[in-house]
Image (cartoon, rainbow, N blue to C red; front, side, top):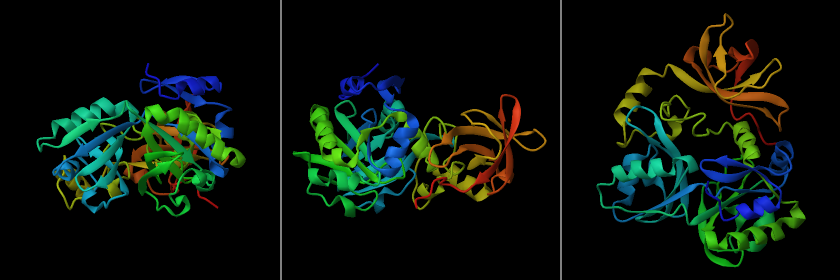
Length: 361
């Protein structure tokens, strides 16, 4: 089991620690509902140092990224980031990731913790272009500082104008008295904020400075359980639950990051799928009757016929209702479609709703 550079701090704070993607990670501190509301209304800090960072350098770096990712990375300018995925040859997804353009011929790819080795091998196997690839995952730490008060709480630590950073932009500047820190206006919660990338040796310094700066804003450490409820309220996919090696980006509602004006892995087959139409779709739903949907629960129609499967589900803290995501036959994917979730052998009524579930204001 790997530790992050901050594991000892989480343990000292009394976090409940769990194994996640091969790492010893904090799942909660005070409890998921309290932590969830802290991020929705104030500011909270997640240690997500288990995520992977790859650097690609050289004159063919963009060409390699274009070949293995579904989105069009040629649209990126310096200081911009892009959500994308790595399609496989069978119509599924190797992983979803964020591509950062640092400069011409210099990119950072941020991948899911559970897929670091798999993604590295996949991209390497397509690198016949002489691109220099560096897997820096074990040397980098990452904090997600999320919530509506994040910019105000962190402004004293940097010369970057945090409040005016466009979504999915980043700057490599001063932060917490250190230089060359990557500050990115990204996150997985839907409540705004930043992700801060830095070397492991600076982790404790940055953690302490972040909590000093945020003290008057009620800043708190947040565990992975609240990260999951926050992202689910936004309808954000989680790899291994809502997308995997067998789910197509088009089925998963990721057509917006699947650009057919370039060639990429399996693009011809995915284009044909788009033209023919998909037989199932990832939808959001809310329960009408009482119950909590969970991963792998069966979805049926009124007669009890199987029409799909739940991929994520929870009691949503911000909404006070049970919500979920799942794949259903396309005929049942329209908003307001009546579906049923099988919970303990009972059919529990639900309806398809438009995502995101949570809407600000």
